[in-house]
Image (cartoon, rainbow, N blue to C red; front, side, top):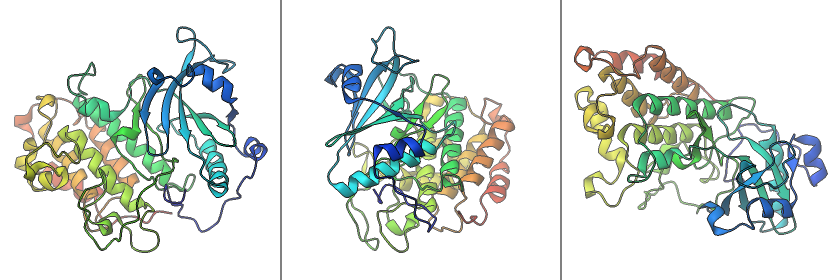
Length: 366
């Protein structure tokens, strides 16, 4: 569980050792396995939403008031995530994690409704987000999902940034492991909801002095670029989260995956391909998703690109904090530069002032 996130505090939390401890320490519902089995139609394949490294994800339906199993027509949709319980220590860690997740509440975090604990199964129950993941909206061409407009992309980016900023705050004190577009869910109004920030990851340990040949989808090419200086190389940091957010923001702008082996060799790594264009205000249009058309202002696009470049900097002192990222994206929305405007009237000086204001020395995270 330690490689899922790293708390910045040196104070160790009190670890619950029983289901009763969870009830006392977190406002969560305890689901019976038979009820979740019925709610997901016996975990049938047509109820599966996906397969993660730590288990499967299923859609189910429960009564909105009693949370008893219900039919598709009458029930409230839920998401059931299964976890593998490999050993007793993992079991204890999971109990501690359930407690922590149950205490977190924020508009931009997926809401944990409850859990199901057994000798050989560990299940988490979340609210279902009807618009699916940001990944599907950006990359599932040819599906029934419509491409997101510029305004919606900036709204999602801001919501995701707010969620990360909350996780970095004193209240949560968590660095997110595995932040990516597939973990940004969208509700009916396209509000971003971060998910899986408490899920265990089975990542291989890699010496941080080496290059990674097969790039992890949201990691820097060198692990040192992630802000990993000492200790366990699998532990994410606030600095690595900012880098990962920069990758996500770049994917939002370009409508392209972080790593795409189907593209020409010079374009497979989105960050390396886009970086020269990000540095030139006149070349921003070269990296923007063609499906956006003329929905954006040139100065707005320049500022969003400049922010992505700051987040992706290999110099940790240059990267903004997530609070600074939120402020920058809020300014884009407040000045309506996330909406359509006359590109011919946009001046080229906006991006520099924007970066100077929000991209200075990185504030220390708690």
